[in-house]
Every structure is written in structure tokens, then in C-alpha cells.
Image (tube, rainbow, N blue to C red):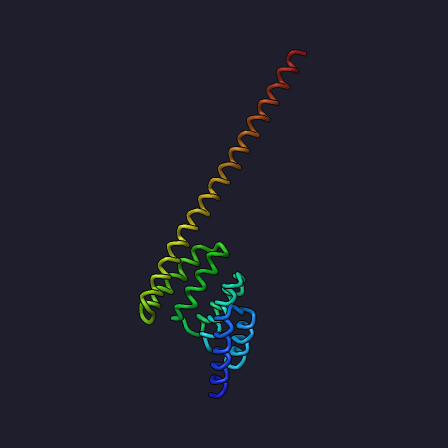
Amino acid sequence: MATFDRGDELKQQGNLCFQKGKFHAAIDMYTEAIVMAPGRSKYYSNRALCYLKLEKWKNCRKDCEVALTFDPLNAKASYILGTSQKHLLAFDAAVKALETALSSAKKTNTITFQQDIRTELQRVKKEQWRYEQKQRLFAMKRSNVNWCNCFKLDKRRNSSKRKKRML
């Protein structure tokens, strides 16, 4: 039990560092807490939030996934996971994580947090649509370039055939 107490003490120190914007120091505190009590989901989700603030998306995703193995109903971890997945352009995974977060949050969290999740879910869907639209436009442009190149090549071939006939 003493390791959990020491882990919670380190978590509190990490929280203070986080509030001051000292994300690297907070990561160190949460990491020490994890060493003391590796099965605590909140330690991982708190560290993931630091990685989110530092835009270290892969580290963020990894910590959220670990947090969710210990507590599948950790709405905070699912929410942060969804946000990191969005930045990694894994939109379907982001939507799934945010829907899980919303479902978990309805059971235990505030209305405000639920609304934050809904807002992020809308952002992800909108970003996914924009990203896919850009991909479609890029593919169309590439396709048009290929058609133009084929047309130009065909035109050159016909031109050289005409020249050969004239000779």
C-alpha cells in the first residue's frame, strides 16, 4: 500500500508541474509514479496529457493504450487517445476512441467534459472529411496529369507518323 501512497504523492507533484506548464518535469514525476505503482491507469493518462501538450503524438497514444488496458472505462485516456489519433491521421481510430470516451464519460464525468468530447468528435469528423477530400483532389489532379501526358505522347506519336509518311 505504501507504493500507492508514494505513487499518488508523485502524481500530485506531477500535477503541480503540469499546472505550471512544466510538462517535461511532470512527465518525470508521472514516470516515477508509474515505476512505484505500474498498474495505475491515471498515471499513464496524466503522462499522456503531457505528451499531448508537447505534441508527441506516438508517446501520447502509447500511454493511453496502456492506461486503457488497466481501466477500459478511463474516459480521459480515451479522449486523449482520440485526440492523438487525429493528429496521427488515424481518423477512424480517433472516432472510435472518442465514442468510447463519450460512453464512459456519461457514467462518471461532468456534462462539460461530455460536451468537450462531443466537440472533439465533431472536429475529428470534419478533419477526416477535409483530409479525404484533399486526397481525392490530389488523386484527380494526378489522374488528369496522366491523361494530359498520354494525350501529349499520343500527339507526338501521330506527329512523327505523319512526318514519316511525308518522307
